[in-house]
Amino acid sequence: MPEIPNMKMEKNPMPSQDAKVRAHNFDEVALGYDEATALDEAKRCLNCVNMPCAHGCPVRIRIPEFISKIKALDFEGAYQVIADSSSLPAVCGRVCPQESQCEAKCVRGIKGEPVGIGRLERFVADWHLAHSTEHTTCAEPNGMKVAVIGSGPSGLTCAGDLAKKGYKVTIFEALHRAGGVLVYGIPEFRLPKAIVDKEVENLKNMGVDIETNVVIGKTITIDELFDDGYDAVFIGSGAGLPRFMGIPGESFNGVYSANEFLTRSNLMKSYVDCPVTPIMKGGKVAVVGGGNVAMDAARTALRLGAEKVYIIYRRSMEELPARHEEVEHAMEEGIEFKLLNNPVEILGYRNENDKRDPRNGFVTGIKCIKMELGEPDENGRRRPVELAGSEFEIAVDTVIMSIGTSPNPLIKQTTEGLDTNSHGGIIVEEATGKTSRDGVYAGGDAVTGAATVISAMGAGKVGAQAIHEYLSLKVKK
Image (tube, rainbow, N blue to C red; front, side, top):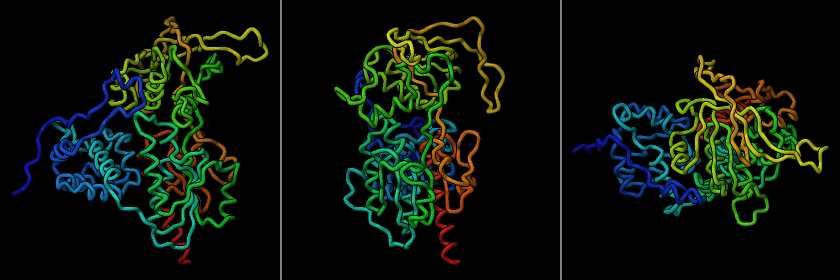
């Protein structure tokens, strides 16, 4: 007898910490499904023959297949299906924007809520990490070496896919810990660092070497990597160069880029008692921007002891680019949204004892101007327009600018013949990730600018396959 699907219209809710409690700790907010809940949610899947959900996944996970394994209580089998396409299942199950990708294509979403694909992926990955005793082994070596620059999602994915094909892969990471944006950019309460460490350890078990504290372009150049015997290079160095607005007062003490603020908290542990690298304690905080990074910075500031946190965004709630879930969590935790407002000046006072240094001042507030939405811009979003004479001030002690990042120019500046665009992104062939340099491929934020973890992973898979085809052809010649 065929299985009768669960036709419940809503997905099973995700258990989470109480908002009043979690706003003061760095423990993971979402607690995950238990086995009974995962099974109930899996039964909502209709197992569509044409798999529209899989077509919405940048790494093409065979979604109905892994969900069918859950229905059969074969949780390890479900993990193996996911792992065949994704090197970071536990990460993606937590931070991937499934609502705009796989779940957006789910047939169940037409008349109700889609299947909770991301929540099921997290359940399967966590079950594997808790129960599996098998150790990943190295593939048979093929005698060729590939260098991967950056240990973020695109670099880790590329390295994993190449290691499975027998390549000797070395990842070069500029910071002292592997994981890229997964460890310095995403807070502990959204993505525990122990999860990232386990995924990195899995790659090491596959034979991938990771060298930290290596800045490509300073410690060693791409040309020198080839001189050292590497047959190809993949650049997955991300987009770590913060952008600022260019308004008065941005050089004051107490003004941070979201990149610096989150790196100090996540990687350098500013949240511990008596931190070596403190950020701020108490006071009022304004976060400028409306993306996921802005939500992360605002919620981190709250956990670091801010008495009040504002999100300042120049468009309305409908245009807010952050995930709905993150916005909801921020509101539940008491963060105030100042929408249709834009900063025009950061207010502060100078240190009268040192008038020679214009940076020697401290934040006292932020001046904003009210906005209204006009005609759509080139991206289809209604353009915000200033309302003359509507300026107002908010008293704050810290300002965090979260308006985007660009690729660091160092690799371009030290690599002959590597073409980049006006935003500093490396120019590649879309289908392969091939750059203007022979044997050099790139993907993720180093190409696109700041984007999602899963899109970077997709680029890593494309780059790995293209490198494999390139080096296979080279051997035949």
